[in-house]
Length: 345
Image (cartoon, rainbow, N blue to C red; front, side):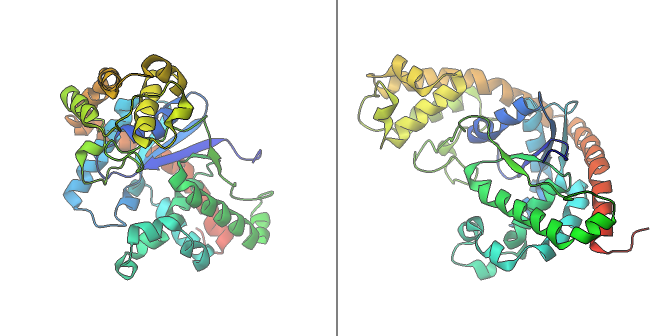
């Protein structure tokens, strides 16, 4: 790893509104990483079309998610922010990785099984080879670190396997092209302390999700103050009072979720939250959480809407980010072509 420039890559799909789980689970870490690393943040629109998207809605969603990135605190002067489809090296490298990865590896990917369900014969080929494109997203920039949640760890392991097999299969060609050691790094998961795992407000055993049919299950980053407060007050709870210490949250997923959200938004620990609210009813915690969430998320929602009203500005940031991303990916892809044996002019 020491021979590769430390570089962070991550991305989100432009499908549905970004929500509190995206913000606490990923975005806060992305913002912090801007202070210490070279960061590339992508709107992964090519991944989005592994399931059918309405073209008009997709175009709008790309701009909306970019607006949310900016409103949360991603800074285009410090990070590269772009949409995946504007950098063709992603797709080109993904094809080469389709020829490097093995069927057995993809057959073990649990996310395909979950998304395709029982009718996997009707799933798109893109959904099946999605992890190879994810590997290309990362390795087109020789990224060394990837902030990932639990549901993406298996895909990052596959990216490491693909990088390793490419380095092994083409070891002689890599050396002949003048490269010492491996051509691609083994990307590492970026762990920044305990991850905030935000669960559904309607079911504390399920992750907060953009795809949940109930809008009451999540706090969208564009929700207004009244909507945020209403959703929190309607959040599912149990009949018991709050415990005074974290051990008492075991087996109580909704209580665990609400105290965890409060702690994350307040920048405190769960034990500190329970020291304040333990022994009391959920209503007191919910009132305080609603006030805190409005204070934290309200400005993000307002700024997102302001940016959505100025699509030309957002498009300009994506265009500039795409040029900067290509400046990194283009020479790497050129070397990959040489190594693979293609004729390069």
